[in-house]
Structure formats: structure tokens, C-alpha cells
Length: 172
Image 1 (cartoon, helix red, strand yellow):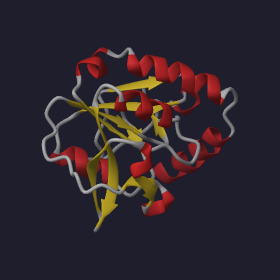
Image 2 (image 1 turned 90 degrees about the vertical axis):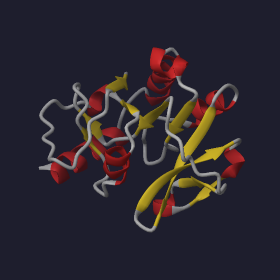
Image 3 (image 1 turned 90 degrees about the horizontal axis):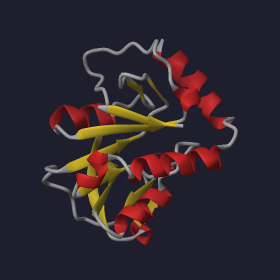
């Protein structure tokens, strides 16, 4: 079931019309979100494969907050502080990852902007199937916001005990 939904929504996401406008609208919703405004640290993925664009968000947050992006090593995902987009290089899965060694050790007062292939309106999420975010969320209790396009919302998503929901979903 999950694999079918993943394939379906990867295809839908690839063909979304008005992506630039939607990315701009999502950007505005994110930067005006009350939880985001209060957070000291933003954990944020670096967009790839037709995901909601996060590069503009990263640049925006670098001016006023601490920013950390994920890196996968030895089957585990951790977040590392960055001060600039120049501190990123292609890593696991050809996704841009931090080159810094400044690992986040304290997840107090942070928000995690979370990728997903599709989400339900109540926060269920299907990712790429490797479970990195699920495992991270199991051991780190952080507030999670999923970013997606409205075309990738599906309230029929079924999850299992290992799947971790997001607290809210921002979409356009």
C-alpha cells in the first residue's frame, strides 16, 4: 500500500503546475507560522526531487536563526549546523548535506521542517521508505511541520507503529 502511494505521489509531484507560485505561498506560510517565529533552531531538509523548495527558506532563516540540515551516516540521520549554503555538498542519495562537523546535540526550542512524498491532513506521512525521519523523531521529541503541495494530500494514508506523524502540515 505505501509503495503504491509513494509511486503515485512521486509522479503527481513531478507534474505539479504552478510550482513556483506554490513554493512562494508555502514560504510565506512557513515564515509567518507562530511556532517557527518562536523557535531558536530550524531543522530543515535541503529540497530535491521536486520537493517543496527549501533553499529560499534556508537563506531566510540563516539571517535570524540557527539552521541545521540532515546528514546520513552509518544508517543514521543527524542534523548539523550550517552558516551558509556553501557548506553543503552532495551526499547520500545525491542530496545536499552539510560539510560541517557541528552536530546538533540539543534539540530544545526547535522546529523540524519535514519532507514527505505525501501527507494526510492529520499529519500522517509517507517518505521515501528508509525510515530516517521516523527513527529521528522516535528519539527526539521536536515539533514537526510537514511541507507539501495540496496535490500530495491523501487522508487514506495508513501508518504502522514505527511511523511518526508530523504536528501540522503546511501546503498550497
